[in-house]
View: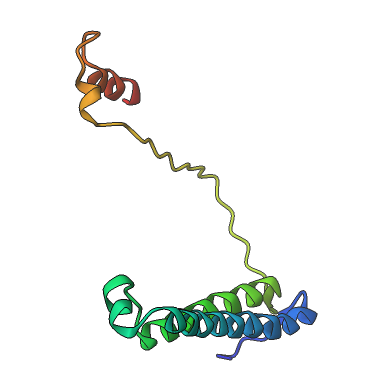
Length: 126
């Protein structure tokens, strides 16, 4: 594949592909079974009024995406590695990503202390 020689740390996990396919087939069968059960109890006219059903194409697309995600997981579990010269990257730069979540609702504008809560929180973040 593009001149890369790929080997796997756990090649025996390839058999999880069968489990993955079985899970997706089971999900498809459950979807069909649910449709049949609804058809037995509720008329078609009432089904349109009571329940919005996804189209067959949408169901197949969802199952295909689930299959693709599970297959990617199996591929990752096998730990693929390329053979050849290992790359080493040395760096002295250290970085960190920080995320701050701040409540900006109207309750933060309460004037129980000066400045209001929102301005105080912004000053603490800065």
